[in-house]
Length: 500
Image 1 (cartoon, rainbow, N blue to C red):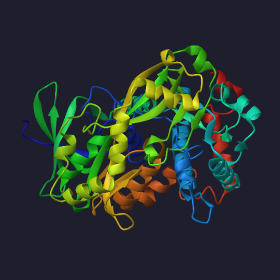
Image 2: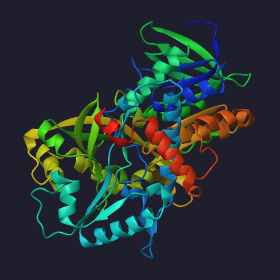
Image 3: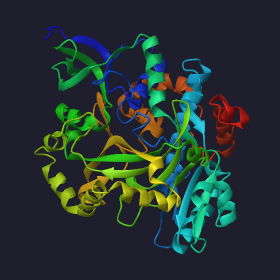
Image 4: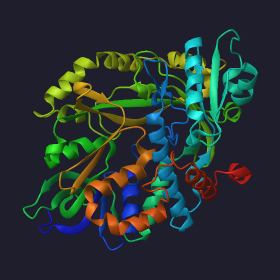
């Protein structure tokens, strides 16, 4: 073990999209700060951020029905959809700034224009979708959305899905052309290339073993250099734990009071990927359905056009699964070792409450290939088994915590930021809409952890993110201006984008 701890200003744990985003923002705002990154694997963006491990939807609530719930009086609650969309707009603005400033290039490597659609079947669902469309289309963030329950129109929009479908069922869809497909793996790698060119020290194959407070109030991080076989100590004034599923065990090691009573429930996923170019060519868009009754929100079926390695592919999923690992490359003991005296009751309560989820996951694990094909055929009636292969997606660790509304051990479907009272350490837990809202999460970290710098940083933040501190919903002109300029910079508008 090296005796003298190495000093740095900021330590980022995990080389995923979250650390990449925080590092890139800090480099612009505080160029003199020394930032050090530790990643257990041999390259960036290999776990949750990897393009094969997530849906890449560019979550902006254009097609995800679980962001628009129906209230008891039958009206549609659009608040969550509006919030998620506004958060995605922040990410678009920052990516545009990076491209305009020549800090990253070729945006088509990580973002492509793609229609986002919602598709439902059955009279009740068609009524709901129409009400959702009417509620959202009044909002400037969702302008351009179309609704149709005419099978002929739907054949134009989604020929692959409509072919071979029985004509007697009620069916409807909404479509909006301003959606995107985001390759978060490619974006993460671009951001880390940029950070390394700015002399930020990125240490791959370095696993963080422990985090503890020093007597001076700094954080000491114990790191295992996997290739060198040695243990190193590093100290920093601020630590960010952005290790995806691996964040919870590290957060627990800090011992901060805010880390208590949190648990994690790991869920693995599978996608079916189409290997027939003729089938891939017939579909263009991300089409989200409705989760089956009793199924959790993360199991919403969707048929996605994806651009991976600049090649068009088609994925269907996700099929949920269960593995006790917190990371794809994690340990079978991750779940067990995350149970501590302070979260035992929280975890047990969640186990008792979520029997239906456990049952659902077991059923999903037991699905045969033919059963999975039956689910694909609900979307693509003529799907052939030989055209589809299985891909194992990333591990998600859903947050379990005690809440006022849900009581002890309530399972959370979303992203959770936890920080110490003094703002010296922050960790990110949870899953979707995660990566899409990375910039929003980092702005929240600045408010909680760097309030003393916000005044001096504000002009630069506004230069990078013009809508910072403004509501886009309340300022439609600003939204239109920003949406048009980011679309131009990122190559999302006009024919050039599609042909590139």
